[in-house]
Length: 123
Image (tube, rainbow, N blue to C red):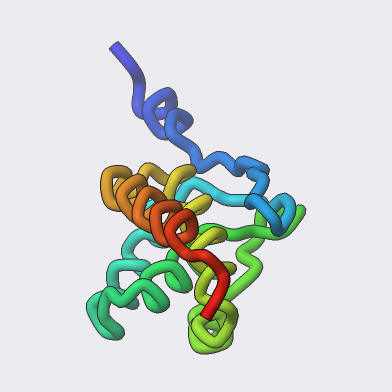
């Protein structure tokens, strides 16, 4: 049987370096309970539109080389003001590392690919 110490040592949040296509590498931390609570609070207060959702996931999970959060909730509007495609790509990478809404993330990717494949680039 596992001891308290063994249980507490399991499941410590890890950090993964992931390549975001067309952008480069970022470091994404698996959320702990506090980060997930903060994410849920943001979504409850500001809604779940794509720009809010992906920006909030980025705030909750992207870290620097020391494992410290790169963004705070004060950066949400700045992130939302970036290119929607850039925020979506980063956000999808973060959701994959954290196994958030896996089916929704896959569906969003499929829909995005279909839209890109259907557009001819002419007006």
